[in-house]
Structure formats: structure tokens, C-alpha cells
Image (cartoon, rainbow, N blue to C red; front, top):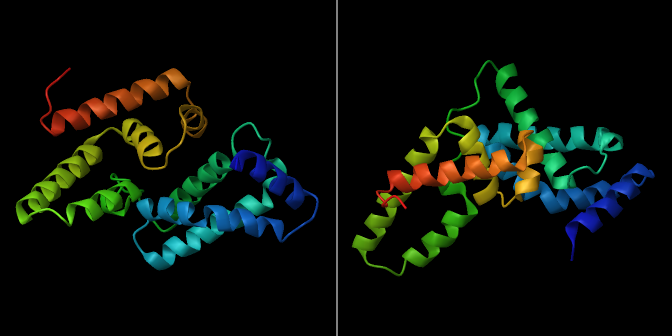
Length: 191
């Protein structure tokens, strides 16, 4: 089922005054938004508050949603801005390291497979995860954001361009450079 079409129909229902229809969008994206906010804010109580605030802002601004991007991309931008504003309002800077690799869906799948391996393989996997985590943390902000949007959030290049406010070619270049830096940190040979 195409979520863009469904999202558009639900957005239209909300605009027409169906307040309950927004609950469908919350149910669909709540987990993703909470994970996104958790990358920037460590306190679970604050995470929940900021995620809820992002949905409230989206509900209030839904009349401004033009459909130039997908609903999720629009909501993603609102959530990121809400989290950053929360940190600034609390007198804190957004963390230099946006991502805790342990929280990623992809890593959770890898760990499930590793459990069947030997202790040596588990140790090697832990070392690899730490190397990747460090490599991601050391990336410049624009490279780190691009690779995270692509690899951990699964956004398309077009959606990443919308979120980051840059051309698709720039997104491709940033993702390529980020992958290259991570591969170098892992000790993989240059191509």
C-alpha cells in the first residue's frame, strides 16, 4: 500500500475537520519520530514530550502542508527543529554525535544474527560497531546527517534533499563521502 497516497488522503480528512484522522498519522509515524528525537535528546521523559510537541505542531500547521514533499519528510523536519529548539531552550547544544548506533533498527537486526556466533565473533562485531560509531561521530555535520537519513531513516535522495535544503547531487556527494570515510575508518582498502 502506498503511504504517500494514504497520507495525502488522511491529511485532506484532517483539513476537512476530521480531528480523529490525525491519529492515523500519529500511529503510523510515532515510533519513527520518537527514535529520531532520541538521537538528539537522551532523557526518555524529554524525548516523549518533544515527540508529542512535534506532532502537536504538525497538527496545528497541517494547513501549511503543501505536498511538495512526502508527509513524513515534512513531519521529520518539524521533529528535528522541535528537538533542536528544545535543546537550545534548555540551554544545551544539540549533541555533536546525532546517532547512537545501538538504537538503530539495522544494528538490532545484525545483533540478532550474531548471537548464534562464537564469543570471538561477538567481540569482533562489538569492535566493528564501535569503529563505525566513532567514524560516524567524527563526520562533519552535513555528511553525518545525510548518511543517517539514508541508511537509518531510509529516506530517498529526493526526501533527503528536501530535509537538508540542498540539490540531489549534493546529497549523493555527501553520502558517498560519508561512506568513504566510514570504510577508511574500518580499514577497508580504497577503491
